[in-house]
Length: 120
Image 1: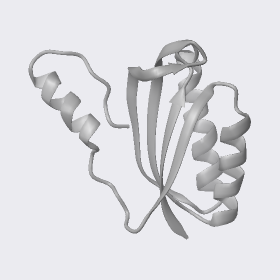
Image 2: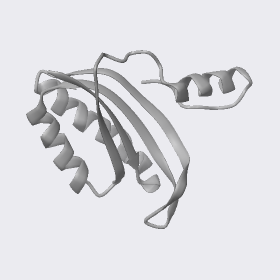
Image 3: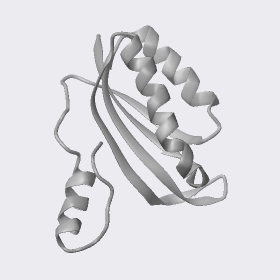
Image 4: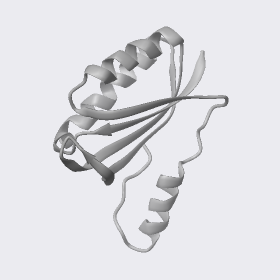
């Protein structure tokens, strides 16, 4: 089993499908004896450049532990899923369970009274 970090950029009009998407991929990972070490919803954010004429999208971050053949299944599924605009899969050497810089930044903003997403 190897450790991976996955970032998904999801179509902004599919906000009601994000929970279903997370549950679907979580089931695939867990049913294949994998583990989800960190799952964060970064919320709807501005894109650096337009993708398919869209300027905003939802971001999800997953740190998982799975085998290579299950990663290939996920990669293929990400590629053909219409609501996933872009994705990035990176292999990591260690388990990452600490909150990301994005969540820490949002937590700091929360203390100032702004709304933000929460680490799942």
